[in-house]
Length: 304
Image 1 (cartoon, rainbow, N blue to C red):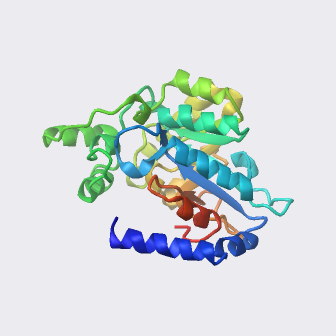
Image 2: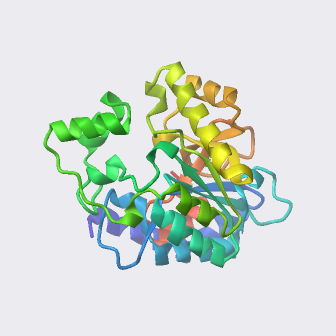
């Protein structure tokens, strides 16, 4: 344990012991929050991929139980309505349609009768190994210099990043099925098992602000049309920005493509006052977050 981690855990313990979380929850009555998850993995899974994205099943289950004690979990479309009761409303989302999330994660939700939305990039379904997992040391965070070059110079485009990686002699990690994307059939079967919906994560998961306007339009429209055709009533016209990246041009194109709204990856609780329909904040839940840390974030503390 690092000094920083130890200090953070000590602060979390003191805050909970002092009842700060309870006071903050009272302040958040009738507020709304969207949680952002990525993958859910078996408890005995060895470290794999970009570690912050792969949350164990038991820890996810504990977080759901914590949520149920203090909030109402609702479908994404309903989280933006002002709650009628005293408890806050929370919507659960998964980015990337990992097979672990689609199987283990949705199973935990179905067991509790809870809803969620999975944001899929259709061009990267069918057992795809995402570049950020393939290029990370197993169970470690992706190296900052690789992430920066991939997102800035290579525009977050999977095929370009693969070519660059191969040319540099980098060895891509072998990833288990639960750390790869689900197939269309796996996603369809999982969605049919509960009150789940599917939204767009673009067609191929690029960094949208680094594309031309025409490229952005293609990414948004192609994904929208494919998901509508495949999922029908389970489709919701919501967009999750890949990497959380967006710009004024991107939000204009999202509106023009008929999306009802779009989600960032950070920002915490939805403001009580005016909020941007195409930059809706979420609370990202990293895999290394402790139970105390989750309780405090769900209470509105340390939200970013």
